[in-house]
Image (cartoon, rainbow, N blue to C red; front, side, top):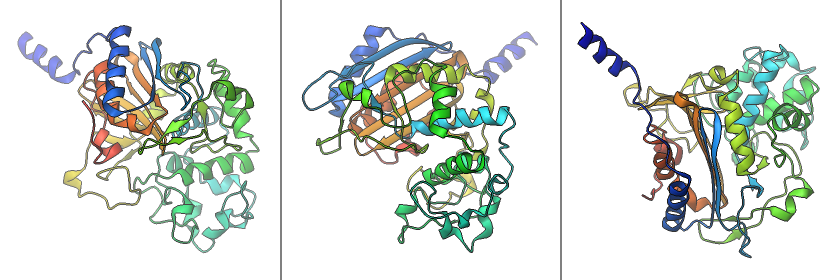
Length: 376
């Protein structure tokens, strides 16, 4: 009986995590992988038991050769979405927002009646499709709105709903922008100021903002594209919760620690919606037949939830032509790795670097990056 009980315990519990590599070993592996991927700049932070145990920055921040430092401001890209989810859950806790209440209930007029302008969004183009009335905050945070990633990617550059809201996952920054609109127009919030007050300031993230700040300029990272050309940092002049955040690796280490220690961790990272596609992009690809879907992969609220050899985890990626970011956490041991790269070529090194630090996590790299050739 005792042997049977021991066998059951071994089967039920995830593999014990190995000790983290030393700072020197992480530095050396980051340098090796940068050389293998031809990346010019990379920054890494590690959290263990909810505490920051490593922050490092490597390579260059610009073509002039200025060093990338832990305090260098870098583009956060879609890591912004995870920060936004954290903020939204504070509103839910306060009773100001219900994840499942139709967002139409928070607006003083039908969504298509708002004028089309850069601040309000293109929502008048939804006139005639009443499905917008079904949309909830949970649907938008789990990328199940029915929208394409962005309206400007549509053939006529107008938003449309491609499926019944809430029925499947299809990555959509447009959906997050709609939720921002509802918070601003329906609840009267200044989202940029509220995220600063509620998230960045309490966590001590002094060099992070959802909008460009002039004091970032003296220590700022430009980016490198796939062809090796340099792209200047985009000074984003308005808050867009789908991806306008500027930050540093030192600040994102604080974000990861605060997030994994937070009271809303279980709700944010719960498997709210199964993911049914082979890869994340293209956004509106056909769903896989049920027998080919990953049962361990689901949408959380602003993050992706998965289960691997070490138990439940979550992650969020961020990308543009000259930026590659990722943030991977394991609930066992409250361990996280955050990687910010001002060179998109560094993404090919992410799976190996995360594995070197955390071991085999089960992070769905192929779902995230498709057919990318990873370096080892």
